[in-house]
Image (cartoon, rainbow, N blue to C red; front, top):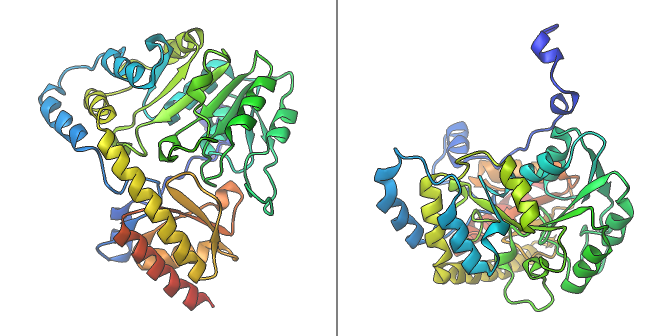
Length: 378
């Protein structure tokens, strides 16, 4: 559409955005290929589904959806404050943690400012940075042959990337899509080295899958020590509530005040708030999910080894597998067998395929399908 005034007036940073590409939906695949019974292992969702307590809470409050939710989210903030042992005024709610990450970019970035994040980091960091006209300062990741964390965050490179224009550092721990992580002492030393006028955002979307590892940091413990620290989390992963879109940030109250000024009113809906409050109280569901995930990681790794394939180290609920070839052909072959996975060429890893850990049956089906595809490509 040539010479459209509205198009010409579009901001350069918006017209050049590469949008986030979600995992392929099940119904779309089944419709395209005329198949039934497909499984989705593409979006790191909880294969056990939501907490039964969350489902009950939604049913109990369904008749109230004609009413606006509490715009301040007091009930959920109070539940989070008690669960996490943080101050209520330190919490910012979001329509998923993506919303909170975007709030941070809109509040603290902009033209003439920069955000630092690692190569192979979550795509939303780059999208939100570019959308507000800020500069992305991408730090080179650890090399593929690194002994402990191939393709992981290179903290020295990230620190060296911080300049006078840097206002925000984004760091996912564990990281998506690689699954790699930064250990406690290293992350603490890094945050301490960052200038106090630069915000450090530690994205802990997958932290609940880490099973009592003494060397893995819980960045919430450092909030009093580092006023420039923001920790983000989500109910989409271990709590199995991805469809409700609820995430949150915990930060110094002065930072939270700025974010809450930017937050859209009613950005968390009524049923979502009731469900997440209930989910916070269902520790048994979290334990079941963590146990299923740990067994699934072992099962899938063993199956990959039998196929002569390896995956990156992972503390999440997924594995990033080195296919030793362009992963797109493997992805396409799995689709035709009714198994949806996630190619990560858009992250700069064209030979890798990310697969979510599912139920025991889903993991077995994935491995069987992968064997068939690899045989067909041999």
